[in-house]
Length: 352
Image (tube, rainbow, N blue to C red; front, side, top):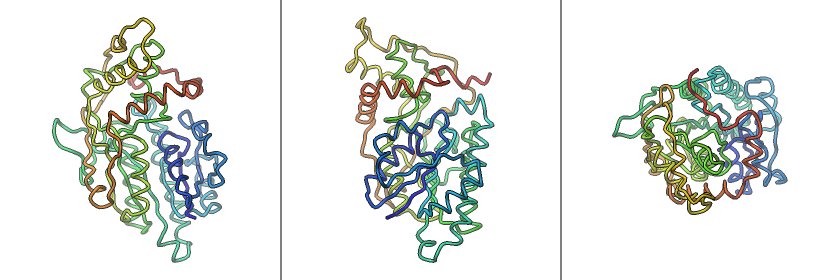
């Protein structure tokens, strides 16, 4: 039985990862999460009774708590998702991103270093620390080219700068202390259980509520879109067969401008949940002032993970976005519960 400590497992990607890990019956998972606004145990109701699943409420910024949990649980691997992740929030309040993404990662690395150092030889060799990061650390691309694992870092937002810092810490702990680390940098995730401050769920819920669909600037900012279950499969692959000290870029091979994403969502909703007045949802699109420092284009070269580890995405964007829209239509109660707090789908990231 492989024991995995998952940080941020009540979040969007972490929760989907836990679900996939538990499908592999030889895995036991401890979910360490502080349950901030985007962390929601409601998203894990279907696994909470699984005997291989455990939960511990803790903040990775609490070094004492992290060290205690590491020693008590005795994991064979750490998969580190816990992070403040929304660019717009980082513009309005960068301090939380520095604390969680940099200090929190440092605390986790320190706890892992002390724990790993004392492991028996066979467990020490098998131990892994997998750090989940983002393509945003690479900055912005022009109209051509792709991010590779060798692309120099050039973060342009407080969020991406904090993630770049955490990436460097993970790399340094491997080269300085020998901890067997792995790093993944992924493109934009989408799919079930995503908190609706992000583009795709926000557009779905705003459309259904008859609200405006705010598109930043001209809407031609390009992202590579990765279905979350494909991402989780990639992480499990890297954890099992990745080479220690290496970075693997994970992308969906789905490069698309934001306005096209919104239009596709509108078209699907026209088909699956037509407006009562019979008008198309695209009528609700409203172009708004772009956010400060908005990167123009991201695109991932996921060739390395394909060549070396044999992973490739199973979903196209068309299959993944249909599954996503259908999930939100089928789960209105979940949507209502997660938006019933402070977040009301308001505009964030104006820099004011």
